[in-house]
Length: 599
Image (cartoon, rainbow, N blue to C red; front, side):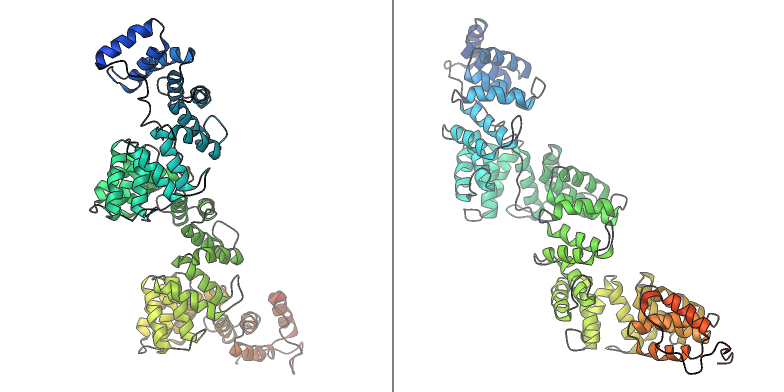
């Protein structure tokens, strides 16, 4: 589970929980005042109609009834009463008692705002801020919110605090954010309470104080404010400012999530993903991640991409994974950038492109992501997408390996095994390779098997070697396949079996493993496990020789010397654009020459 630190939520509820209480008092006895207001309202008094509408809206002295609230407020608004207009705007904005209609909400809020009514000003500011009923315009939102805030209205103050916190419509200024949030919070505004709590919790323009942060979170959460509930949930999950309680974390996260809060949805998704406070359930995790991802929740998009990439909670779909990962990666998510880099590296869901892989991996690696650092180290080690650079490979692999990344450990072990970028050190190689192998990394398993097979850095143990080699080979690792094939070919550590040797050689050779290609050529040349075939032998030996295998180059010349022109032409055709098999005819090559059957 990752700690949330930054967010830019929509704040459509920012005024709703604090609203009105601005109508002029009618006297000292609430019930009597309300009855008096009703009589006046029925006689057409606009102020009384507005007061009665407000009473029904909040259930003050009467049973809450949004339809009655709208009826009386609309009558007042029609007479130009600012409170009535503000109330009508609220009813339309939230769809309480009428069909939700942001356009109508804005129209009535503007009429109230132009009469300097703070509720109308705050609602109009929120509409501009959220882009509901008008084109989104943070500056215009802040302008109207400030007018309301300067009249002491907590809804405007809360919006100003939010704007300064995120730098939307104004310069980001945590000091100003705290000032306005505190003014709102002191009037029990849940938005102000939540953002004041956030300032304490993260130490933004205030001395960091987790307990004080949680206190304000709770006040907001208990008023039903979803963002406050989500923040409180995280506090419970991490045990900062409150005793850790995963069950309470899940309870508050669910309350927030069910209101559509993307942080609550993400936190609840992570609870299901990791089995924190609830039974682990990948499908349920995906459901909540999707809900948050569709609201542009970056962390949720990264989680959803991860789920599709590995098929956890959903059917594996690399293309769908890449779509979600790209959305998160382009917004700076290191987790998404790292996995997107892996997708390009292996060609999963996209056309393989090592250059793109390196580009995304580097972005994440520089933010400290171990997966990306490991991938970047591998790219430098093998020269994929970048110029091969063993020094850079070791640098990136080491920082990844120190964080427990298996790819980094495997590459670092291989670097020590061959002395690439570091002095050759079989002991260090085996240590890192074992770390990687124990995590299931095929490179680590293959090289550790090889170390045991030849006794490099460990006491030679071919039984242990074969165990590791088989694990790597079964994952498709060409080194493991090649060495396992060599074991079967020679009968060292295992009963000699040319058929099995050929099978493993072929799998490795087809992945470009030069050693396996050369040994497969040897098998065809001498007819071990396959029928003797000089053309096929030469084809594999040539591939190995081109890749730099010196023993294959030497045997290639011997095979060529025993071939007919027709055989050599066929082998050359198979070689394609990999270069000429020989620059001159062998000394005794003739059309009538037949290979020595006893050779």
